[in-house]
Every structure is written in structure tokens, then in C-alpha cells.
Length: 282
Length: 316
Image (cartoon, rainbow over all chains, first blue to last red; front, side, top):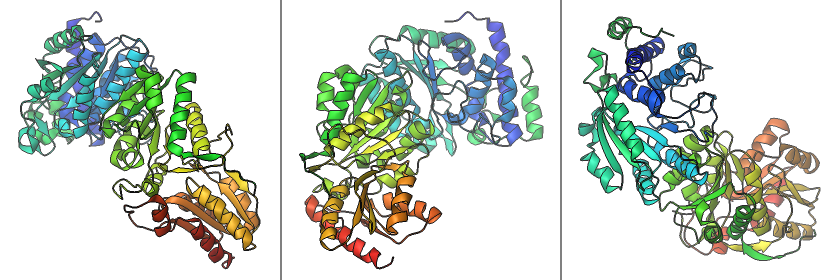
């Protein structure tokens, strides 16, 4: 775990939220809801938890790796990558523009540092992370592989193929997290296709589980730290992270409607007023 | 034509032998299989290198994703399952996690085409070359016999980038010399001729050899070129041959749509159009039956290559 200053991290949260709403507003496209809900998770991961090198190499030998499986929340990923030093913060301006490295969904194709696989078509990231975790073991590299998934994404069958494999093959250098905000494009997850008892499903698939409030920065840091202690024990780890879609922007919270809709000029102003500029806008 | 039969074996065994060779020679090579280890002839690799072999069960989508991930940190994964389950079943995984992500995965696909036989059309994929060649950056290879498949398997390990390597189930004649170097993207001249260019891939190369003999008896001088790499296509080789013969027959165990013939036709249309006939499956699903019977019923026999040649010669 890296040394950190909690006050600085807390300051970063509204700045990342500003980045998210500004990026999405600028293009009038993108996914603000899930991005806003995961700001604390990304900050905890990149600023505190992971041992990683911003001098990016695809192979990431002796580094912890992160895979974003629900690629549509690229705004929060890009903001935190930039503010961790992977690429210039100014480049956030190019989000979703032609000739940009910041594609609508993250990809390796344009060579954006920090991204190790394309994601967007849902359900694929856990398998990729399992493969990367196996290579770490083959390379006798004791680093950890992290993933993030949407809750709606768990409706994809491939997730459960990977879940079964990871426990059967004792992939215990893997810490996955579900962004359990209960919302997806068409409505509440419970209404679209209920996940049932989510924690019991993962337990039944042979995973160790943890629960936390993902919008409480200290709690997500504690939970990820606890998860690290649980690695190397023959089982993968799943954190069921409760979040609020749209967290930090009051009119976006509590609804699926801001999954993939950009704020207009007035709405942007309201969102920015609720998230003061703390570290300098891009 | 001087082509000796060196024996008979299945191309999948050539893959298995090539994979075992790589196991001995390249420590970065790893293999994955989706519950078809015996069918893919991967047992030897599995037994010799258990720590580098991953049995993923009947979960092909997961296998493709895991393979993509294994490349991160320097491994060279070879996935093994039937051609149908290597392509159509997992197209989105191959597209996003492997091809678009530029991952160095070797997708090795057995039991391609009608020669899978009795299992029928559910398993007889005839669209796989088309699907795979459409993916940007994907190399597509369909070797013709045991020796070529073994050599191709070894060669693709040194190629950086995703590869689709397609082979089959039945025992077929071996006629490519052992240890002939496999050059990705290079057409292989098997017989020089002046009247017609026959471009064949996979199991149809042997049928084309038989056809060339028959055509010789009919006074037709056929040039036979083995196009084992459908993508990248050896355009120079194709254009050079056709500039001499002025007409073309393509032969493959695949649908006409999306196949080798279509790729050749594109090259000709863009450079120097020539009359062409396609020996391939014409917009039909296969069915259960003995491989040889199916090849006849669906028009993939040497006699079909002869007939196609006689037809196209009239259009010169």
C-alpha cells in the first residue's frame, strides 16, 4: 500500500467528478452515472492500493494490473489515469473526439497508456484478468490483478464461465469488484433481470467475498486492503461494492436515467457547483 | 508433376506435433483447450508441460478472454477447439479482446468444414475463413497436410499478432516435404502450367493435385499454387500466375462467400480482371455423412475442379 494523505485524496474526488461531467458535457455523449459512482474506487485503487508504474509497459511485469470490464465508465478511468500521471491531464479534452487516444470505450488500439485490453462489449474483462493473473503465476510475479464490473454486466454468461474457472484453478491473485449501483440502461437491475442473492452466487462459485460502501473513500481503501490480505489463499476475491449511480451530482443520483446521458449547459453548472475545483480543471 | 505421397495423416496431428515441438523450444508458449484435448491432439503437450496447459472446460468465450490476458506478461497462448467454436461461437470475444486489442493469440481450429463428417452441419463450420479474415490485423492460415500444418504451427509462434490457424479431422495424403519452411503469406508453387491458374487451400490442395493430373490427360496445362495463407494474401504470386494463364479456379472447403476465392477475385478485379470459377460450397449448410461422400455431394471433389477448369477455359 502506498503512503497517502487522506485530505488530498478527498480533494481529488470532486475534481474527478468535475472531469467526468465536463468530458461528457463537452461531447454531449458518454456515461456519467456509473463513472461518478466509482470515483472513490478508482482513486483508492490508483492512489493507494496498487503498486503500478505510470511509465507504462503492456506486460506490467512486477506491477499490479487493473482491468476495467464495464468499459463505458471510461470517463472516470481516464480522469484517474491522467491524474495519476499516465498521460497529460490536458488530453482529457480529446475524449470521444476523432483522432483521440481517449476512445468512447477504452482500448489499446490507439496506445493510451494504462489500458491493457479493449472493453465495451460487456462480460469479457474477468476472463482477460484471469489470463493475466495466470501469467503472473507462471512468471513467479507476486503482483495482484484487479478488475471492476458493472452489476448489470453480470447478466453476461461469460462472467460466470470466468468465475467458475478462477476458483477451480485457484486464481488467488485476483481481486474483483462489482459496482453494485442497482441500475442499468433500461431501469433498475431488479426489474430488468434480478441478480438474486448476489453474494451467495459468488460464494457458491468458490470466491471469497467482501462488502463495502463504494462511495466512502476510507471504507473502500480499508476493504481493498483487507482483500489484499486475502490473496494467496487458494480463492479469488470479490468485493460487492454498493455505490450510488451519479454520486456527487444530486439530480443524477437515484435514477438509471443518467447511465448514458450527458448534462446540458445548465445541468453542468449545477454539477460543477456541487463539486468544487480543487486540483485544477483540465 | 512430381508430387510424392509421403504417407497419410490428419492435419490436426500436425498441429499437435508442432505444439509439442514449441513446448520443447519456446518456454513462452502456453496452450488452452475447451474439453477437446484428444480431438485437437494436444495430449502430448498437456502431458509434457502440464504447468503451461490450461483446461478451461466447455467455455470457449472464457478461453478466448483468458488467452488474451495470458499475453500480458509475454506468454504466447495457443487455443484449441473445433473451428466452429473458435470463430462463430466466440466472434465478439475474438474481435474485442484479441483482434482489436492486438493480442498475440494463436487461435487453432480443428474439424473445419465438411470433412468433419458424421456430426453434421452444427459442427461443420464453412464460414470461419470469412469471419476471421474480416478482422483487421488477423492472419488466416489453412494448411493442406500434416507436414504443412506442423510447420505452420511452429511458424505462427514467431509471428507477433493474432493468428487463425485452421485444420481438419480426416487422414489425408502427406505430400509437403518434412521440414519445408513455412512462410506466412507466401503462395507455394506445386506445379507449373500455362493454361489455367488453380489456387487451392487446405484439404482441397490434394483434390487439386488429382485434378491437375486429370487435366494433363485432357491436354490442359494447369498451374497449381497452394495458398495456405488467406490473409495476408500473396497478391504478387496470384497476379504473376494469372498474367501468364489468363484464367483462374479457386478451391477450398468453405462457403464461396467470404472464402479464399473471394479474396482472389478482389485482387484480380482491382488489378487485372480474369475469368474465374469457384470450387467451394455454394450458400448451403452441410449434413451428416462420410467426408468423401460429402465432398462429392457439395462439389468439392477433384472432378469439380476439372469441370470448373474446362468451364473457365471457354471464357478466356
